[in-house]
Amino acid sequence: MKTRTQTKTARRRPEDRPDEILSAALDIFNEKGFAAARVEDIAKRAGLSKGAVYLYFDSKEAMLKALVEQSAGQIANAASALALMGAERDPEKAYRAILKMALTALSDPDISAAPRLVLSEAGRFPELAEFYRRRVIEVGRAAISHLIRTGARNGQFRDIADEAAILAFMGPAVAHMMLSTVFRLPEDPDLDPADMADAIADIVLNGLKPRGDVDA
Image 1 (cartoon, rainbow, N blue to C red):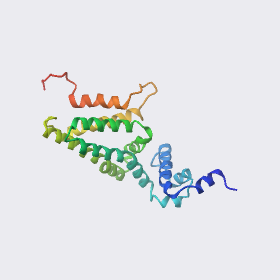
Image 2: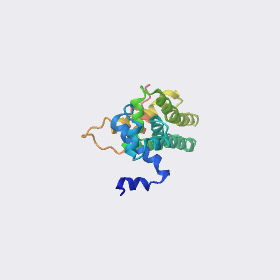
Image 3: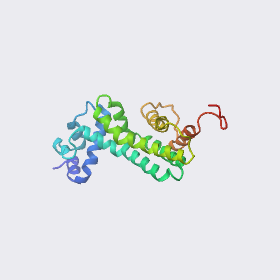
Image 4: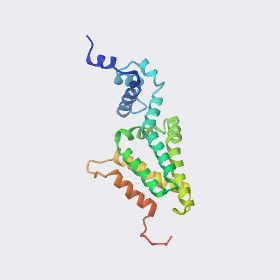
């Protein structure tokens, strides 16, 4: 007689298995750390054989890359699309939309889990760091750079150094992700990501000085 687990496994559709494997991988990575995680542990958690897992992913590195694609990769793609659509019409509005989208998504621990894993393991796994930089950071940088240059050309932004502006634009998303997940304390207030995005955008776009203060 089949157990409930065996019956559930037998009823699985093959097209569902990659997502089930990735869900199990994320659980194992979070529990044991990426370095200590084993493919056999992931297979067991997914209710599959180790060989079955290798039909879909050839390594745990491939699994983490796929998890990045599902989370930070999709956020980067969305930022790129918003920048391309909104830069000519209103780069400030486009930036606010990008920041709101990013902060809202990264406030979800399930979405930010893979990016946080890469940030914590990047020093020991340079291939993962290179992949994340190429797939996520560079896509985001290109989107923000496009906004900055378009806004400067249209006279809506000052003509400023790209690199400094990119750090100022992208940094808050990373800081918010870490402070709302890894470093969050029980007594920390619940901050609405959309409200926080608006407040951060005001500071980034207008600076800390009172309006009308022209002293550089």
